[in-house]
Length: 609
Image (cartoon, rainbow, N blue to C red):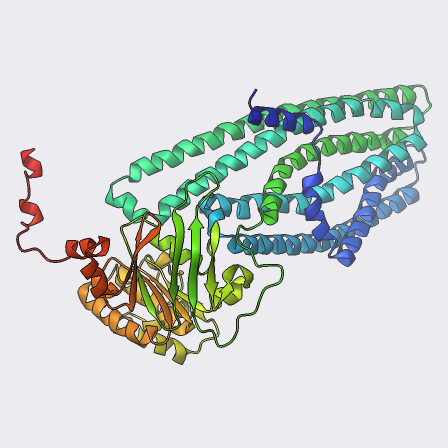
């Protein structure tokens, strides 16, 4: 047996009697509302008391009609029964309102905490998870916990009270029939433990399959242009339908377990009731019980129904345990990149002195290093460009400055302080990043620019947009700065999204700027406009540029050449060309070559192959 199999077997043995422990953190949150919980619980107890009184009052009503033949007594008992229903209705209203209020507040708080937890985790966490799967945890799993609180927990208490009250009253009225009623309890409890474990496992499988399907759909929507450009709509739809079939298969398996479970306890429970009523009928025939007193034995129904409901609730709780485990495991997840216990304050004003000191890095403990002893410095106000072939570590180097990742060895310093000693918020507040693929939110142009500084005025946003040469196209939009950009900025071109991302950095006014292929999506005219804007943006700021465009790179104060995660050359554009190394070779590859034939004329055409 493998280690994983052994662990699974051990876990299976451990869960032979499923524990409600994973739901503990949920009910700890309920204790934050003691007043509402107390009122809701008290009215629930009173409502159950009214419910238990119902068969007794009905028994008295029948005796008034058939035994005493008294119209006065009949009227009195009937009015009492109506009053009982009124009181129970009031208690039910108060109980539902108070406990629903608690539930909604607790679940809203849980969703908020879970979302805050997820957005605070490092990129390394999201590299291992699909965003659609996380969305499913945030919605489907939390919704299941909402069901536990809004219905199942209340019903659990209600049925426990009915069980205790019913047995007490039945024992007081007809002790001989109590044992018959309780004879079915061991059978139902045993079935609950057996089927509860199966239900928990089946429900977990259903939730996992739903999360997988949600993740696949989210991924497809996020790359819809790629899907459609390769005409893979039918293929993706087929994949999704196949995943839905898997959901249906495991859901039907769960339905079979639930059907057998609930059918069995219904049969056993109400068979016990039938026997109790048969025994009561024998007592009526023996003149030891009146007809009204026989009706009072409806309490046996209450007891049987309570036992059956408790068994069903037990199964439902087991289905919720898996959801609770996943939700609270996410809440307990520790980020690979976190604030230090005692953060150091950055000296003000921030100078922007960035230094890499023998930095090595790998993306996982079992993966090879992608950076090897990288050392270089960006002095305050200097523009440094990283140059190298794709996949050799340039973007990884840039990601270490704002601590999206932490070095495996060595240190990244800002103003002579290891960035790992700084609070993440303070560190990232002084760094502006323009990524290769800028991400926009599904709001207006104004909201996307102001994302860098939510308290910015319209005048601030307008200045930033003008500085990024973005007003050239914003003025042509239907509603200017108030134009909706669509999800992920789909209504704007790549170049327009890039300039909005640059405007964000203008608005943030950081000490350190990172440009990761910031002009890669621009045409020649836009690139020229943005580069002119960058002259103002980069003035007096420490800047790290990643670019394959040598028209941008050659303007840097210093160029660092990266190959296979190592610094192999460093110097100015002129110096590196004179060294005739990797930089010179890459530079020559971008120069126009008149001798080259057009692509359409090289080699055999596709149709001739």
